[in-house]
Length: 438
Image 1 (cartoon, one colour):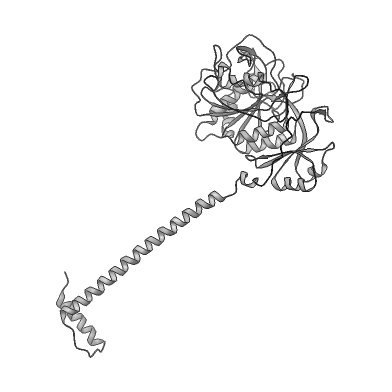
Image 2 (image 1 turned 90 degrees about the vertical axis):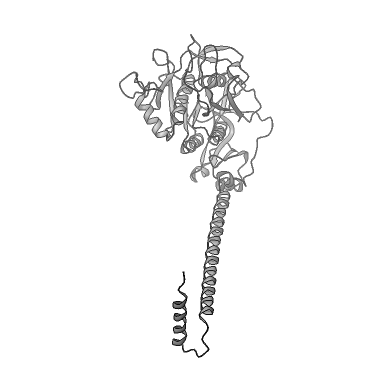
């Protein structure tokens, strides 16, 4: 409560000191004036506080909105390539085979180029005849198929990845007494895995409960085989009388890259493989299975390196060209996990390739798979082993906090050692295991 006499005396003293000669106001009027001033100051303070808070809030909201706008406007790989006009091959184009200087099958008169946007624009300005141009949004690159008989040395000198459009093939072989391909492991619902192979006969009864998203990357007018891809897909997500999926409930993203040539053989080009990898890299998969093999290719290698840089593990069959055969690709690339095949007694498949690029072994002899035409059969080969290893790695990568490095390190530590003690060129680190050595 205010001491009114004391307050009035203080104000009188203040007036005297200031030298005022006006008549002194009454105590009540002095009190009222002082109260009025205090009220005005309090109101002023409250208004200023409210304005300050309002301004601060407005500034924060403006900064938040600016940040959101900046995030939306930030350049992405897709934005960076948005101005690139794609060049598609003519409808009904047919594949024309040829041989490179090493005797390997390639597309006649065509070179592959993997470039960034600036390099791609320079190629067009320099007058290169572009047969096909595709944007690779996930890899932030442009894939070109250009005309030419001679190696474009000028592009190599600029550090641009250039190579022939090499041909690749599935690597499964033979039949035998059947054994289950996958396992009765717990559900893999919510997990997504990628596959680069032939088309999949998705109407097969083995896939009646499977979630398969399929996309074709074949530009040529030719039949599309389904046998090999159907078999590999059935190992991953198929279910039948003697067929247990390695990844029950998982979503399979299947890239179809193979077509039949004039001899009826199933082949795929490096260009199709690169486009398939780009699609899968942008689809959210953590593992991509490639049960195929062929020669080394600089453009394919660069694309696989780009996929690996995104934290995606590429698993590939080492091939069935025998113990004396040369290393096959993509399995022999340093960033790829090469898989060989063993039978139920952990003996290596007789036709499996050998070498330092063999990382692990997996069951791949007389494996029960779905036949594209209906029914089931037993298949053998490193192609059948690769998806089993891919499934084990995909499950491991689905664990919180996992990374390709940690998962592969654990896989090496828990692999069941086969053959010579430690790593060897036949079994790699041993048979890959989901539960560790027994």
